[in-house]
Image 1: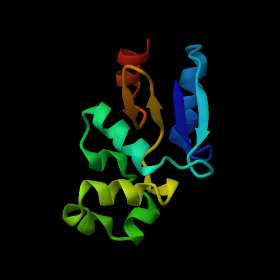
Image 2: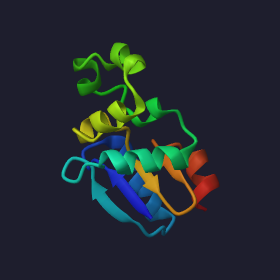
Image 3: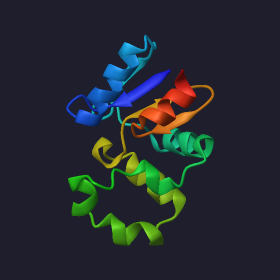
Length: 116
């Protein structure tokens, strides 16, 4: 299992604590130091059944700074994948990647259903 996270993010810290408390093994990946590539994001999105917008950190400063709320509707999927790959701060986190599921964000109920 891959745990893509930003250590300074309080939600990521809660998610890490949850994983540790449930003795779930994972490989941790720092989203800023090792940002997901466009092809990784595309693969995860296709496996997730989520709208592509869910992969954007819509509450982040970078998202607002770039005025993406207005720009995303006019961008192609490929352009969005490439944009997400430019900066880890644009990507919603944490992300869990397993053989069976992709989880974006930390929702305890969803994590319990998929990981326990």
